[in-house]
Image 1 (cartoon, rainbow, N blue to C red):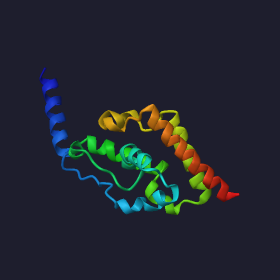
Image 2 (image 1 turned 45 degrees about the horizontal axis):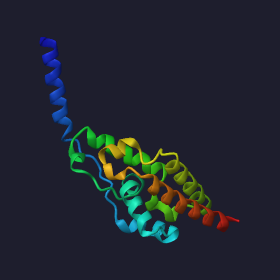
Image 3 (image 1 turned 60 degrees about the horizontal axis):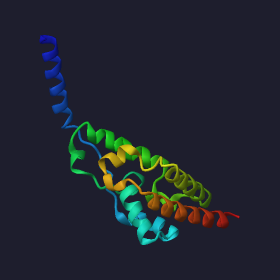
Length: 155
């Protein structure tokens, strides 16, 4: 029992110490999304869906919930955002070639259509980010059109 008590105190101590380890926030400017929006022309409804389900992890602009300031949750969330941006960063859209944009839009609609995105772990904490069938259909249709437009420009 004494060993368990010591382990508990050490764990509590570590939990308190990691609260003071700073984490970098992904708080860029909303204007970083302008190129993406201007090129892909999402409808107001698609833009609303992108805002609630995509931008936090796939842009340089993250709206953090209150619990982001609690370690180790903040470490997990920051890793999640960094990984999301590695795969698809809408704030960097102006740096992508036409071919890459076309390919990223294909990956995007496939992930949404197959319900791999948004991730379950994101929708657990952001209940409104869970997409309805109607929203999935709307976003996939828009993304396929955008992909076809890029494909036509490549030829």
